[in-house]
Image (cartoon, rainbow, N blue to C red; front, side):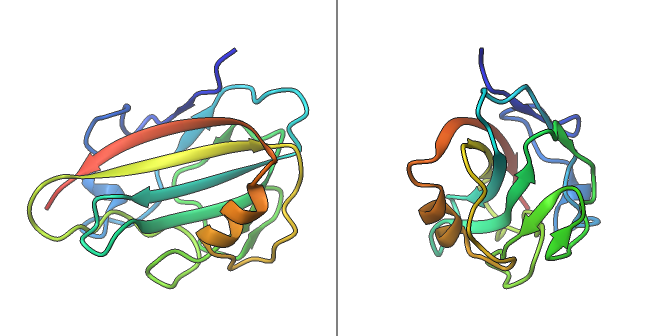
Amino acid sequence: MAFILESKAFKHGEDIPRKYTCEGDDISPALFWSEPPDGTRSLALIADDPDAPVGTWVHWVLFDLESHLRELPEGVAKAEEIQGVGKQGLNDFRRVGYGGPCPPPGKPHRYFFKLYALDTKLPLHPRASKQDVEKAMKGHILAQAELMGRYKR
């Protein structure tokens, strides 16, 4: 059975609405996903832009998401820990939580939301970096789901 990540705000490959960007309300889009594989103990979500001029730009890092969750609401609080949800790391804006698309004017950028089903909780504190989360996940990924949206200014 496939592990699938979706949003009501945009479909895979479509434009991300302005509301979810630095030109709008800069809030996270609602996301929902299918049943993760058996043995899932936690979930992690990383959103990044590989088309940024300085290299891949990290927009959102969440980890130790409760394994029973099947969705995140629109506008997840920009807090280090969210009761009943999980922990958030630092994005490349040097802030905790979601930082929406904010590319320089020009070609559209691609924004990848990657959800990982893990067989463990991660031994990390809030404010962890994408690199910390990826290192801690190594050898523990049961499945991965991905949603890609585009945005240009």
